[in-house]
Amino acid sequence: MKSSRRRKANLAIAVTLFSASLLFVLANGVSGQSAQTPSNDMEMSGTSTDLFVMMGSDFVRPGLAPKANYNIGIGHTFGFLKKDPIGDELTFSYTYEDGGSGFWHSDFGSHTEAGGVMKNFALPKTKAVSGYTFVQAGVSTFTGFSRLQNHFYNGESLGGIIHFNQHNSMWLQDTFNKIVTIPWYTTFSVGYTWSW
Image (cartoon, rainbow, N blue to C red; front, side, top):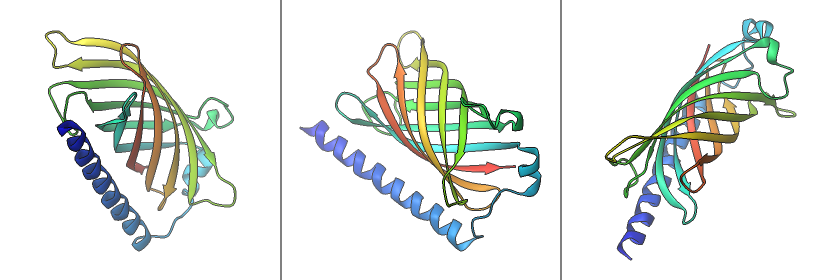
């Protein structure tokens, strides 16, 4: 009973923080510059580099137990891959996920280094919003045990990008995650991206 209340309280805190950060990012984007298409240099070369920082919550199956998920990564779009059906952007990222009894952090954590391929695509009738698919593979290391445990990680994501201007955007992403030894889980994340 007590853990159920704690989970609900942690989920309420996570939703509140998520909502506040989303409002902050949207307010800055609207009050700053209007959405623009990428610069002519980026369009002509077809390349760009993205540095992204994302925060989200895992929902572990079964039970929907919420857990903190922090992600930082870098990706580079290659012009010659624009017509490739699998992806046009190669990425590398680091993710920390709480694996303990709390929400934010515990001694039991999952540290994942993953490489990925992202496919960016335009949405009809808008240049301010685009979409992407994202496939990742890597190694997750579990900490807090007597020995470190390394396991293969696989994740598939679907996301949307709100472009504030040629350098600033917000990413919204939902990911299906699978690590061999634990049940599957999904992650919903919101992040800020700087592109150049």
